Length: 171
Image (cartoon, rainbow, N blue to C red; front, side, top):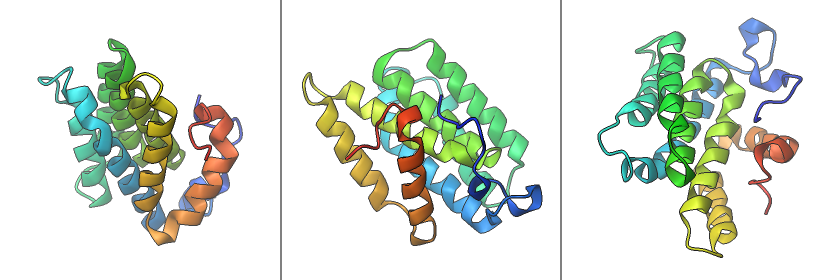
């Protein structure tokens, strides 16, 4: 579970009654794609012939450029998550990160899902006893990638939803 029961209006676009601008929605999507892409090799090392997670990341980037529709990006996200379901460990989490990134086009609040699954992937891939540290380092790296325009929004979102995101955003 990564989404709250009550949707935060800061992650709902202006045209749907929230306060999120289209520009910030695209930045959230690009940040989610960056987080997912950072761990994609953990999936591809296990499933080198399955293009679905990489395609999901490509699709969300295409959506931010206006080249495809929200529906196309969301569908790619579903395909990436289907690739995850048959796996376990780091590969599974990395595919879920890609899927979550692609569905940011549909629901902006999935941005945190992409980041959280990427952290889970790094934790799972770390040598025994080093998962927590690896996760904290990944979280720091992700935060360094945040564009200034959405930095405060995402950091506040991490504090608010950390509990439902497996507490991966704890410092």
